[in-house]
Length: 154
Ligand SMILES: CC(C)(COP(=O)(O)OP(=O)(O)OC[C@H]1O[C@@H](n2cnc3c(N)ncnc32)[C@H](O)[C@@H]1OP(=O)(O)O)[C@@H](O)C(=O)NCCC(=O)NCCS
Image (cartoon, rainbow, N blue to C red; front, side, top):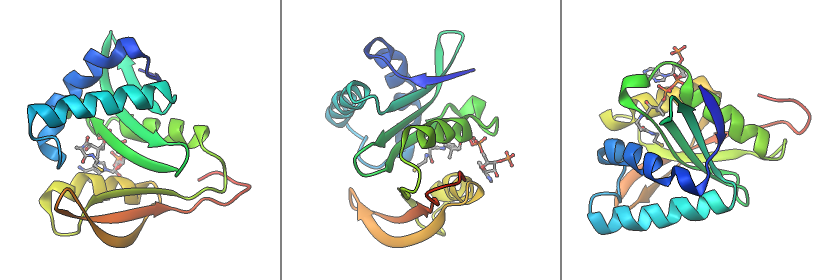
């Protein structure tokens, strides 16, 4: 499994995985929203801020992040390849691309929402702690924060 920055030519394989997991993400319900998301992914790719896990010409895991705000914007792993530490490797790759000492934030489903079970357990396992409650696309969410000391690694 190779973890690397995505290129423009990865977009079809990337979107194939997005389509598989779209029901997990508020804001990806319609064809129009999906087309908008594709344009967003291409912008992240141009900014060297789209990371993918590739094996046998297929993309099994995807991650978008912001270099400006140190935010993890999107993360998903193919349902058939979960619990193989693919997401962990994607986040480690992102951490290497962001400045040490910068806290990383992400928003995910709130406690008690079955849709957030895997993601919340995942972020906690990496040392993220719970932050403020918010809403995204009308969906109740919670921020998670990874505090990073300026000298060490997580
Ligand atoms: C959340 C998600 C990205 C995790 O991907 P993954 O590759 O399966 O995660 P990893 O294998 O790297 O997990 C690392 C650790 O996180 C924890 N973890 C991950 N999934 C878990 C689950 N379903 N239940 C409990 N703990 C879990 C475990 O501690 C795991 O380590 P272990 O398997 O050695 O016990 C994946 O479940 C997914 O794509 N979910 C749907 C989309 C989603 O929720 N995205 C995040 C929204 S912000």
